[in-house]
Image 1 (cartoon, rainbow, N blue to C red):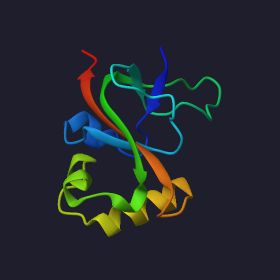
Image 2 (image 1 turned 120 degrees about the vertical axis):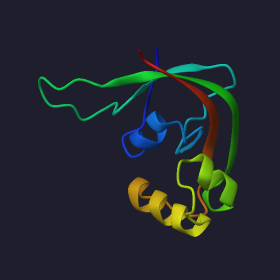
Image 3 (image 1 turned 45 degrees about the vertical axis):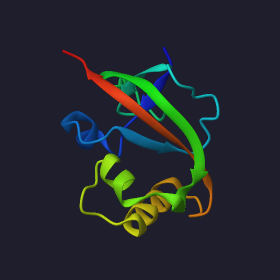
Image 4 (image 1 turned 135 degrees about the vertical axis):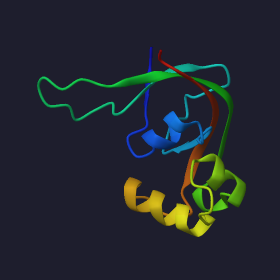
Length: 114
Protein backbone atom coordinates (compact mmCIF):
# COMPACT_ATOMS: atom_id res chain seq x y z
CA UNK A 1 0.00 0.00 0.00
CA UNK A 2 1.31 3.45 -0.90
CA UNK A 3 2.13 5.71 2.07
CA UNK A 4 1.24 9.33 2.81
CA UNK A 5 3.17 11.18 5.50
CA UNK A 6 1.79 13.53 8.12
CA UNK A 7 5.03 14.54 9.83
CA UNK A 8 4.12 18.21 10.22
CA UNK A 9 0.44 17.65 11.01
CA UNK A 10 0.41 14.43 13.03
CA UNK A 11 -1.56 15.94 15.92
CA UNK A 12 -4.19 17.44 13.63
CA UNK A 13 -4.64 14.10 11.88
CA UNK A 14 -4.86 12.06 15.09
CA UNK A 15 -7.17 14.59 16.79
CA UNK A 16 -9.53 14.45 13.81
CA UNK A 17 -9.31 18.15 12.94
CA UNK A 18 -7.65 17.48 9.58
CA UNK A 19 -9.53 16.08 6.60
CA UNK A 20 -7.79 17.99 3.81
CA UNK A 21 -4.11 18.01 2.86
CA UNK A 22 -2.06 19.71 0.18
CA UNK A 23 0.84 18.05 -1.60
CA UNK A 24 3.47 19.10 -4.12
CA UNK A 25 3.11 16.75 -7.05
CA UNK A 26 0.83 13.83 -6.23
CA UNK A 27 -0.59 13.92 -9.76
CA UNK A 28 -1.35 10.20 -9.44
CA UNK A 29 -3.86 10.66 -6.56
CA UNK A 30 -7.47 9.95 -7.40
CA UNK A 31 -10.81 9.56 -5.69
CA UNK A 32 -11.14 6.17 -4.00
CA UNK A 33 -7.41 5.65 -3.40
CA UNK A 34 -6.46 4.32 0.04
CA UNK A 35 -3.10 5.18 1.58
CA UNK A 36 -1.30 4.20 4.75
CA UNK A 37 -0.91 7.33 6.93
CA UNK A 38 2.57 7.45 8.49
CA UNK A 39 4.91 9.88 10.25
CA UNK A 40 7.37 9.97 7.36
CA UNK A 41 8.21 8.11 4.18
CA UNK A 42 11.92 8.80 3.68
CA UNK A 43 15.04 9.66 5.67
CA UNK A 44 15.09 6.79 8.14
CA UNK A 45 18.19 5.89 10.12
CA UNK A 46 18.75 2.33 11.25
CA UNK A 47 16.77 0.82 12.99
CA UNK A 48 14.13 3.54 12.62
CA UNK A 49 10.85 2.60 10.92
CA UNK A 50 7.66 4.39 9.92
CA UNK A 51 4.98 4.88 12.56
CA UNK A 52 1.65 3.81 11.09
CA UNK A 53 -1.34 5.93 12.18
CA UNK A 54 -4.10 4.34 10.11
CA UNK A 55 -5.54 4.64 6.61
CA UNK A 56 -6.65 7.56 4.51
CA UNK A 57 -9.37 7.15 1.88
CA UNK A 58 -9.36 9.85 -0.79
CA UNK A 59 -12.75 11.50 -1.29
CA UNK A 60 -11.80 14.28 -3.72
CA UNK A 61 -8.69 15.48 -5.56
CA UNK A 62 -8.06 18.73 -7.41
CA UNK A 63 -5.18 20.96 -8.44
CA UNK A 64 -5.10 24.62 -7.41
CA UNK A 65 -2.56 27.33 -6.60
CA UNK A 66 -1.43 27.15 -3.00
CA UNK A 67 -2.45 30.76 -2.38
CA UNK A 68 -6.03 29.97 -3.44
CA UNK A 69 -6.63 28.30 -0.06
CA UNK A 70 -9.72 29.51 1.78
CA UNK A 71 -10.16 30.18 5.50
CA UNK A 72 -12.42 27.10 5.65
CA UNK A 73 -9.70 24.92 4.10
CA UNK A 74 -7.14 26.28 6.57
CA UNK A 75 -9.50 25.01 9.30
CA UNK A 76 -9.87 21.67 7.48
CA UNK A 77 -6.06 21.42 7.28
CA UNK A 78 -6.20 21.40 11.10
CA UNK A 79 -5.46 25.06 11.84
CA UNK A 80 -8.67 26.71 13.06
CA UNK A 81 -8.24 30.41 13.77
CA UNK A 82 -5.28 30.77 11.40
CA UNK A 83 -5.45 32.84 8.23
CA UNK A 84 -4.89 31.71 4.65
CA UNK A 85 -1.78 33.95 4.59
CA UNK A 86 -0.44 32.18 7.69
CA UNK A 87 -0.99 28.78 6.09
CA UNK A 88 0.68 29.77 2.82
CA UNK A 89 3.72 31.01 4.78
CA UNK A 90 3.79 27.79 6.86
CA UNK A 91 3.54 25.60 3.76
CA UNK A 92 6.05 27.48 1.62
CA UNK A 93 8.65 27.42 4.40
CA UNK A 94 8.19 23.71 5.05
CA UNK A 95 7.94 22.62 1.41
CA UNK A 96 10.26 25.21 -0.13
CA UNK A 97 7.89 26.32 -2.85
CA UNK A 98 6.24 29.49 -4.11
CA UNK A 99 2.79 30.70 -2.99
CA UNK A 100 1.54 30.59 -6.59
CA UNK A 101 2.68 27.00 -7.15
CA UNK A 102 -0.07 24.57 -8.12
CA UNK A 103 -0.55 21.92 -5.42
CA UNK A 104 -2.75 18.87 -5.16
CA UNK A 105 -5.60 19.32 -2.68
CA UNK A 106 -6.69 15.97 -1.25
CA UNK A 107 -9.88 15.63 0.78
CA UNK A 108 -9.92 12.40 2.77
CA UNK A 109 -11.48 10.28 5.50
CA UNK A 110 -9.08 8.98 8.14
CA UNK A 111 -9.45 5.70 9.98
CA UNK A 112 -7.15 5.31 13.00
CA UNK A 113 -5.30 2.11 13.78
CA UNK A 114 -6.72 0.42 16.84
